[in-house]
Image 1 (cartoon, one colour):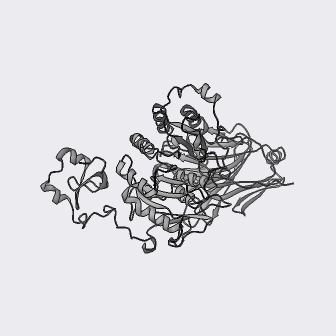
Image 2 (cartoon, one colour):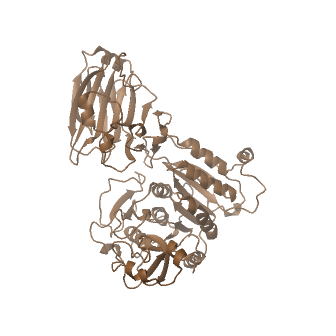
Image 3 (cartoon, one colour):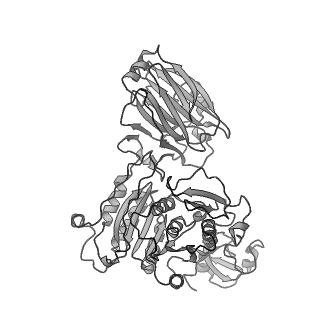
Length: 592
């Protein structure tokens, strides 16, 4: 039996669904484990386990999903698929709030529409659920021209591996490249849907769609025949996350033989990325350039060379001969996404494949040092930096890993001090019981002095997931003076604070402090009688701070009883963990 003809289906022998195996006949699928035990011999229990719901004529491409996808995107019923418009001009591929649109109408040139199946009506697997962050980062980079990619009028042949929604390939097709989107057979219709959403039938730039299972030479040969030869450039977004796939992925990239492969790798687990880099080093691949784009590693990968006289471990010798400028992580925390990072000239093929590039060890050091938290020149991680990362839109995303309060959240503080002015932050609060997302000003480093022995001034928003509802959220606001004297008040805003970003601001003058949300003042206090507050304002003694923290039933109580009751406990949080909160820098204004 052809080991490369592996597919996915419901095993008619053991009954497992959505599992890898082989088709024995048009209506009989057997998983790899059952093939190993029983071979391809008929079994009596096969018919019993091959339920009527699974027995359909022929061999549908996606037969184990709940429905068979229509041939055309226009025939998909309303509400079955999700559609997002990503703007590629001015706003640089940002999501305008996931507003729905008519997917069958091709998008304008200033946008790319993604079509996904988060509910798995038609498509199974993670690739169909959404546009993953690494795919968005690569598409955004390419939509800005890739800083020197010669696209217009070149007939550049581009192949995207594991395309899914195909945003990177679509971004290049828009610029004149000849693009083929490839994926496993059961996701090809999704690729077609995304092509339909972005190109009219008559558009000559319309990408092709083809099957390409990693490690399958027959699929590679068919793709070459369709493209008219090997690709010049291979794209891959979020392909590096399962260690068992690394060898077959690299073998497929090598078989495609492109001059350059651009990969974006989500930094979910640095240990997994380190294993991938070790694999590259052991096989003498060249990492021509490497940079950080949001929370993704952007890598220009070149094929191994037969010339192995140099050692990837000789970092000093490599550094002396680097021909590309080093690219480090942009200080993007709470700012719009950075500009293009990698300069890749596909026209310079005369350089061959033996040119000096970045060593794999340099790439490894970049990963380990560039993103241990969200610190940059303006903000510092106060504790647990491993719980924070910067996403593709420049927001700091903080996680609570479990219902244990000790595993929940972190705090960051600004490196400058402020006084009078409007001090604002975009915040998306973490959901559910027992977790608080905060933006506040403090003159003691952001610490809550439980001993009540040292005076401090603090002005805060405490956004409790427990207090969020679909149409409103109650938010705890507080002004601490003296030695822990509280001036608290609950305000109510007309939205779910955990569903999206809103702007929270503290407006400080020499006579008042106001709590402002999305430009609306919800609370204002006269501070003229509070000498310590006035002094802190006049002396610009405040730091801005953001934090996420949680309290389980085992944790010591913090705050007054009313606060603890409003917060709830993590033990009762019904969300899937980890849960997340996000912070985006908002416009500040000084009072003169």
